[in-house]
Length: 352
Image 1 (tube, rainbow, N blue to C red):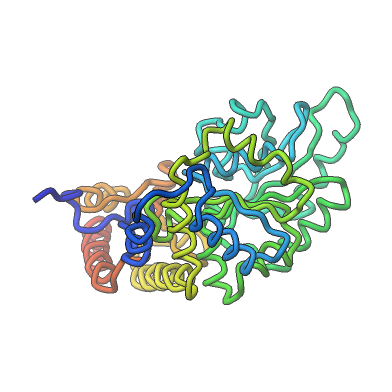
Image 2: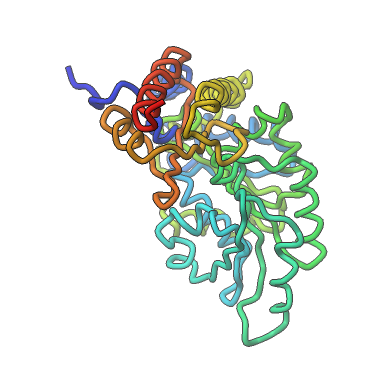
């Protein structure tokens, strides 16, 4: 029998997790007979209705293969050839998408320094001097991640403030929502309150990290941006021929708020992990735990030892900061075993 890894449980990414049984069941249910290709099927129609129920009647939704594709196609709807995107320096579109936005769209990303992955209107204000100056790329889109790459969350009020500022200066607000579900679960609010009601213009909706096999979506909340979406999706190589199998996964996550159950559990496991290590000598938490990620600094010797048994990423090698990520299928037993091993490794490294 094949095994996926020699490690007991991965804490490197929620992408390492399996597929939620309800999502697998939805795929199997969609695997019945023939169906029109490229979205002309009943499963995609049902998915579109489900997203309108969640995000509002003006929302249009396009299933995608991955988050990078959803971000690139979405940004492309709002950008002109000479435009730029303002984003945190830590943003996934800036650091972890292989320069896709710049290569595919030819746009300029303007990264803004941030301590916790979040930006504010004050961070944007200094970049607005470029507006109208033909020597500069024109700021056109503000892009934020929810949750951020530091595991922190924007509140609905913070997003609304950003949206109001952006719109007042003729800019659009884009959200990379790879872990939007985790933010809504942590804040105890709806997906709509963090997006539609807060003034977000378009977003990528993450599903793969929250129990899907391979499904993301571009959700357009500003109708005037929607006209060229079908064409850009095709050109961006994100048009699935057998779309029913992508759509069925998205609908399954929205059904009975499965997205919330999965995300809330992952978040709870991260809080359990953080609570288990917070008081260890030589360990310090670098960011508030507001989702399913824990950022901790610990002795280098302990990191080396733990990486012999567990998968996780070193976030900042200069300060020995690691990132531990939990998922919908992480159990309390996984966490307790990991905490016990972290404790032994840290005590061995510090002599405590």
